[in-house]
Length: 229
Length: 305
Image (cartoon, rainbow over all chains, first blue to last red; front, side, top):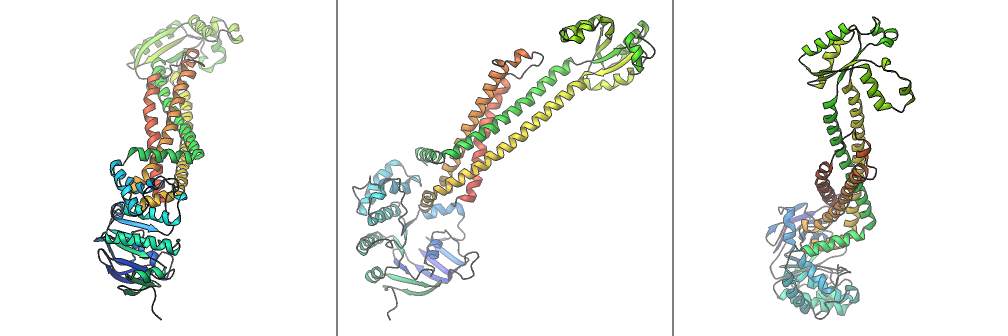
């Protein structure tokens, strides 16, 4: 599903690499937490997966494709097989809940009939059935994030990438989002989630990958947030 | 891709940048109206050339009594009947000469009266002050010099005059005007293109949230860019349509009716509607393609896909 072979990333005009010699593999259907302090390279890791950036050294394979060799015009096609959720939800404020989710299908050319069928389905799945016509501004943070998850999942991606999805939510709401991501994971979708939320990582007991100053310092199955001191 | 989705995106974008859209429309309209105008002017010069070169003569002016005193070419006195006969015979022998007509002093006086009848100078003129002349039509007007060298300085000949030379001055002037129009057009066009680039930049910036999301959900580069490109193209076509309207109205009100130059200046035969109408598709095509291309290249810089 994902393979990093000795991946390093140096941004232009910066001497310290954002990622140093990272090698790892994530299998289909796994749930992986990506932890580390700010500036540890988590965001760079996710940007490499999305091919927003290219690796300076080493190879990144996602869904069986070498991203360095993937030509630019094929990148959109690759991204259709990924879902993404962010801390700031990234919803379109002038579109309804339905339209926000439908947007992900419209831009890849799905027919109106398909959209009418699949959007209510996925909104039911995230627990927002009946709120199709609300605007994002009328929803709570947790609900907005559910919309974002619905949008990420509506095209049934093989891999879901979540960048601190609970960062703006209170603990109780966060638990709801985590349950949702867990349910999506159980449908066979691989989930990679970058987070600072210690409680969540400790409770879920999933694989934990820790980065520190760009290096991979821990890769632990059924791990917890930090080292036990 | 669904047309309705793209169309609504275009509408939203154009309204969001209404002032910029307006500026683009105006500058495209002006530059393309100038473009069409300069094309029409070239046509005009060409038809005028065809019309006038057909009529131009080389004139051999003969000495009259007055010239005999004032002009060194006529120092040997006014032209005699014998001299006129040899000149005519020589002209008829030359293969480049198409036809020769003789204009007597009375004819010349009559023509002059017709053209400048109201001027005080015309009132003081008498027929014997006019010059007799041979009006020669050449098979090709460029061969004027052959006539000039053969007859300049001959007894009884005051001067050999090429009317094409006078016309050429006029055409050169029109040519310069045409180039000036093209220069202004180029400046306006670059202004229009720069405005489009800037509009696209602002538009891309104000919609970076949407385009970012489109990118994340895997929209193709073309799908993300199409609304911006179409936005520029739609603004361009509106400008192009206005430019077309300028040309049509110009032809209608300046040439045919209104100012009605065609009636007032009957000596000049103006370009007709066919010339105007053939320019319109060209202008519309340019008004669509140039903004679209400008937007395309601007997006490569300002919109990450």
